Length: 117
Image (cartoon, rainbow, N blue to C red):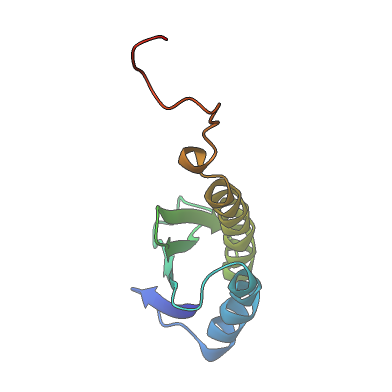
């Protein structure tokens, strides 16, 4: 898993970056080695918004792109909620990938449509 933590209009401190990397390392067990994971941290500067610390995550898989967005009053809480949401999405994605309907077609020994004998 290749992880990229970046800030949008906010400086990402080394402690927050290390915290995000440690939390998201749980996903590396379930994702392929070359999977790109991006986390974007931002802060909304509107005083009327109480949950101003926003964490957005994007996982680029072979199939669908998984995205999640969480906001709270604390950046670490936003990261925790984001990781929970992404873990659920990755788990569902992995379950869907194991069952491929086109490979489970039942064959009853017929040679196909043709004249009845």
